[in-house]
Amino acid sequence: MFRIGHYGVSLALYAPVGGLLVAGGSPTAAVAGGAVVCWLAMLPDVDHQLPGISHRGPTHTLAFAALVGGAVWAAASAGASATGLGGVAVGSVGPPAFSLGPVGVPAFAGGIVGFAILAHLVGDLLTPMGVALLWPVSEYRYSLSVTPADSTAWNYGLFAFGVFATAAAAYLGFAATSAGGFP
Image (cartoon, rainbow, N blue to C red; front, side, top):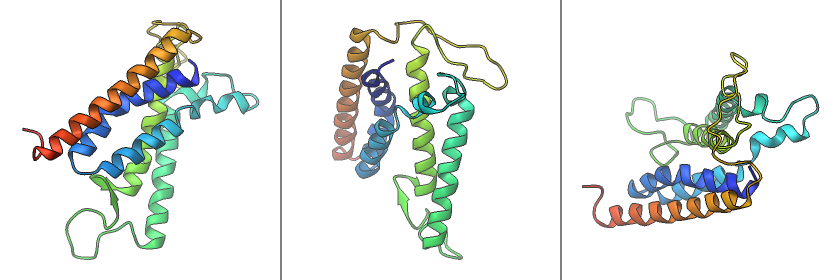
């Protein structure tokens, strides 16, 4: 899949999450999450620059998504602890002292990064080549075989769909906010 197709898939998959964040009163988190998902939409394709790593190999797996998401969570947790922004005051009950949306920054950061990688994998699942999601446990390649990766029409169509889904989710999220939340 081309970059534009991966952006479209990422936007389409993130749209409901962003819409819920907006509806929940966290539009900044919604925009930040969407920006990160798009920014990292091509991260699994880093394998093109890594010698000895085949394309759609280890970087196109659930294990990679969990590893990178977990590493980002750990780094953000360490940073939040070092700056005093990540914890709750002793003896208090409630959300983290510094949060982005309904969760603390470390969980949000790790979750969004893992989500971005998973969105890339969904895009590649649409192609006949597919991905070995369960590597290293299994080398079986999963594929929905909907479109060839180099289909210009599908890539731009997915992008248009992702933009539409994002706009619709933002509209519905703001509508829910102005109406006092979901019914």
